[in-house]
View 1 (cartoon, rainbow, N blue to C red):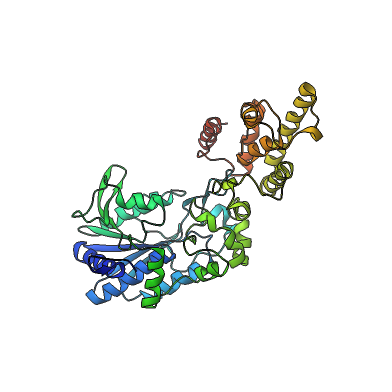
View 2: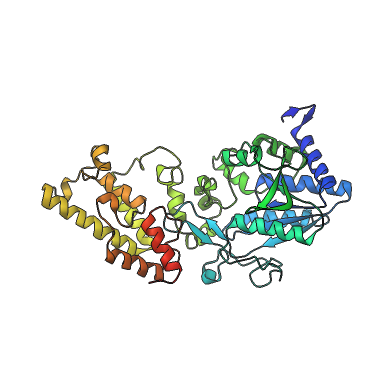
Length: 431
């Protein structure tokens, strides 16, 4: 366990939490069910009992989670019942889906998909049906990060003085989290390095995030759990047994940019939950298979080694057809035209299409290859610009028809500007 200024990180974290209770008029902690926030919560409960303090806990239930995570949250709730008031939120919030280019975001607890929900809404949860009357700021489909900021503002209006919001993140877990903590442009509370002021847009709130375990390493987290005999999410145990390093284990929102690396564990650890997730979150199985390949941008590998580019192309089309057969057929139609053009103008039949061509010629759209076709599909190039096609009226009409049938097919988060404009047009109700 790291030691500095004659204190180890565990002692330093306890001091920060104690200081937070002294400095802030009210405190609440954001908890996810992961190891970091779980350790923070249990440390805070110990300090609160010692100081005769009380605090709140915000847990945003993302629906398509490990059953064991929910069991752990229930366990933590009982463990801290004497010192904490819980806000268990199960509302339709928009979440990042990094495993699908078709549905880059999905909405948990969406009533429109209630028949596909992974589980029932927990008892005593704050839902779309019973949320507080003064949550006038809530909008269905609002972003996760947007919700947390408005919640902070709501808490600050309910309570007098300055509010402290405990966040269980560590600076060594990712560069994004490191920047969150060390950014010198952040406003700090009394110049404490482990605090940052919360803003809602440009409006400064009387709320400060504080990071009591920011300097913990992964080993420090597990060392604390062992030393203090703390509760922990048993999913980590299963991940470790499945060969996932303690440094690579991710739980919260497993379809996010960082967490998707462990998505393939979902199927092995909780197969019954996984079966429901497949029908709920678009691209989940695709992410399960290729979460550690170039398809999701995590490694430099070109494609599965056991497949040729032609086989890979077929696999992509078949996988796409499981979720949206009409979109698969749209791509097949474009590919057939691509083949006919090369046969007519270059005398190149389908059986003569090479696996790969010169990369510069492929990029310049001057050479046919199965790799070029596969890349177009995996990038979800609807117009098939990578195969030298351009947007047509029939294509626009097709995407509008598909959008009507598949609500989440197209969002304004797509990279293609023309698709982005069409998405905006559709969402405004313009045909």
